[in-house]
Length: 409
Image (tube, rainbow, N blue to C red; front, side):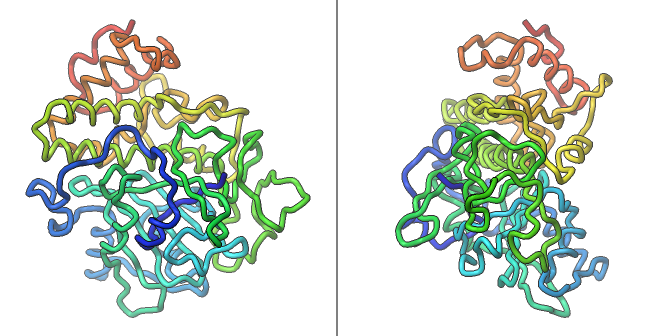
């Protein structure tokens, strides 16, 4: 199987390509995106891209068009996206598919609240910004030199990015795919952290000094008959325009989690704003907590190590407790995180949930971390894991309920 990230495909392509599969935990959002408490299309957004547009309008920021990179380099700098987060996908699953192939892979960059897709010689840069009030908001920036470049909101992206695969909220999706239907990548199924490692990363370049024993990345003609273990992608395609030659394994693993939990955060937020059904609200909170605690995470089959510096830099970006521990510390031996509770608990999306939903999430999180819930699916969280997570949260998460001071058993 092969994996591809979609940041914009036609609805017709979705219908033709997607095989039925469960993409996310739980049911999709059943309400309306234009409910008075949401108003996705009409309420003014508030996110990193809106702030950048305001700076551009005021002359406080400038974007520079640079050769085949276009606006990429200056946009990365303006948003604060790092080259070490670059992931390279060569499957032709995008509305800019005609530009994407093994010799011209699409570059994707991310941080906690922004994801960006760039195709060399493509028509637009695509950006997904995480908005605490609205969820994921999509934008494009024309890849043509312009005296006053500006990001424009792209509602057309919802044709793919507000479906069952995103829990019927505006979000991101990861796919596994294989040849078929007359396309290079035609058979499509969803991927998340529960997908076995052997089925991940097809359609992507995967780089690092240590890689999983089995994965489907780097399956390109240029490597036919050669080792698929890559530290860098140098020599596999012309480098002109790219900002890095890595598609880091640690970044790929982190992003697989982030894409899933963002959708669950948005679904929980939207249900909290619109639903009065307590069972629906509790279900949304429980699904989110399962993702936060990496329940059902497929094991890493061997220790992995990237080569871009992503893992080291990622770990420095978040708060630490008095013992120097952080929810951003990566394990990368048998599982993704050393302390398996999502760093997205610090994100604008988490902060943007309505108070009643936040209370339900904290209650459910404490029920598991305290040891009160002894369901078999939580056995992978040892007492030491749960105690460390609680201690880190006590020290680093503002607004934590007082009951988190209780005993962990």
